[in-house]
Length: 203
Image (tube, rainbow, N blue to C red; front, side, top):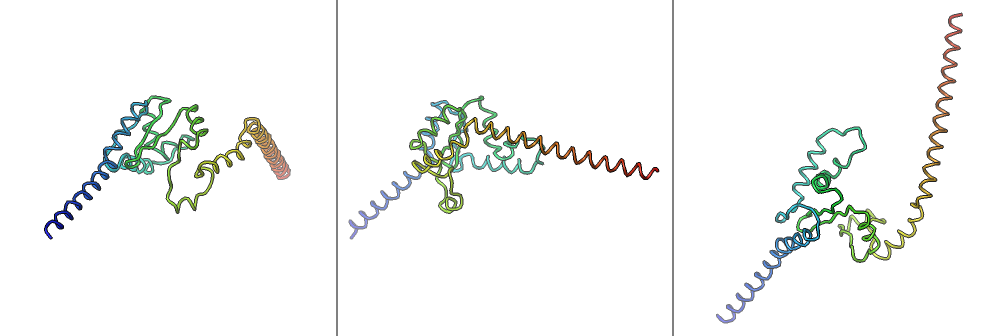
């Protein structure tokens, strides 16, 4: 009976130690190895912080950004993604960066040729996995993977060719000119009517 109890307790200790090793590996050793590899490849980012990564700093910066009034400019990125904006400003221009979502690094590529390469090798660069409920609510091209993504991208690609975008800009410019002329004519007519009314009142 005591041999069976000793065997069971040893087996239980082995299972607990294995589980603790997996936990330590997943939450500390593996992220530190990944951090070392990312820095060797020239990426810029913060050091890994146990369990939280950059989430605490990111949420603090976001809360600070939301407390400030919105400026009347088109420069809104520092309000929407203040943490990423801060890292991009701190790193050298054109460098790729990484941030930590818990123990998982997220790489932000800023160089156009690398972005094009990542889009063309879609099977090597997987997108971040979303919550299954979120995937149901937000289906579309940003969430597709593999051949489904390639098919939809091929369908959408002609709409974003340069000559079509230029044609759309030209049409928009002409529409703006037409609307401006109509408003001017209407204002001139209104001013003529007002001046005629003023002339009649003085007589």
